[in-house]
Amino acid sequence: QLVESGGGLVQAGGSLRLSCTASTRMFNNYNMAWFRQTPGKERKFVAVISGSAASTDYSASVKGRFTISRDNAKSTVFLQMNNLQPEDTAVYYCAADFDFTSDSSEYDYWGQGTQVTVSS
Image (cartoon, rainbow, N blue to C red; front, side, top):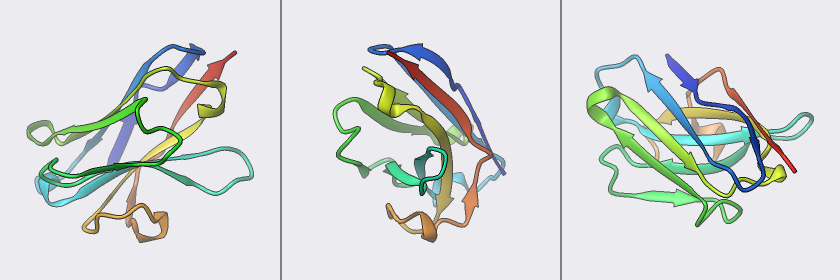
């Protein structure tokens, strides 16, 4: 089970930190990713981090503004979002899988999502 938190309403240029905590003792075996979705559109890749945190990847739209990290001792992955813009408004989901991939169809485990709204 994956549980996200940290979403909310922020003004453009502001920051938010999302958290996703997993209920598994094998957390470090999983690559963890963040995706986001707006109404009527497909879920889009945001960032992914490997189990050891040695590798990360980001979508072009967030690179340089967002940072993914993890604390394996707490079974938690984070998404630090800086310089947020209205186009970042979406429901953000965390996901877990054994594969290091940006393809949402590959992920077997998903959180319930947390809303991020950025006002202009």
